[in-house]
Image (cartoon, rainbow, N blue to C red; front, top):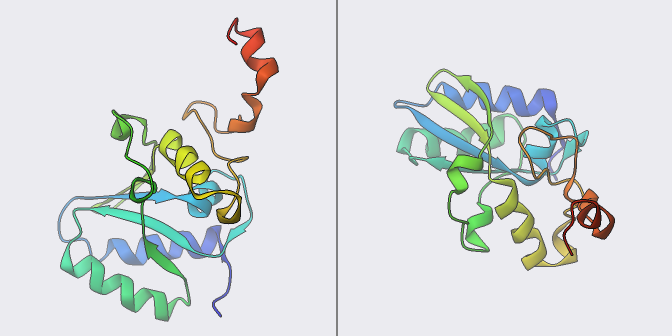
Length: 153
């Protein structure tokens, strides 16, 4: 069993992975790893990510880094479970640039829908941020009382 991933281990992984990027690459984080960098949790059991493009050097590096750093890494996207929403790339919040690797949070709306689709066994949508401008406002705060305040039903 691999150790939980905290912020320092995630950043070390991203830095090491960036050395293998031979061309400009976008890395999208989802789930616990995304929440970890937003400061919404202390650790996660795995790093869910998607790469564009999926270069051979990066994929080979992933395999080695999983072992070297003792991390669970999965190439998975919320869009593997539900269709990505129109304009999803526009909602992917930029996190940092490390060499040729541009790190982003995957679209929070698609992440939330993916959590709902997979059901309660796969985690909670409580901490999924719905706005890049307000990461501290989780999706759960958009309940009926908030909708009434905004004149919605």
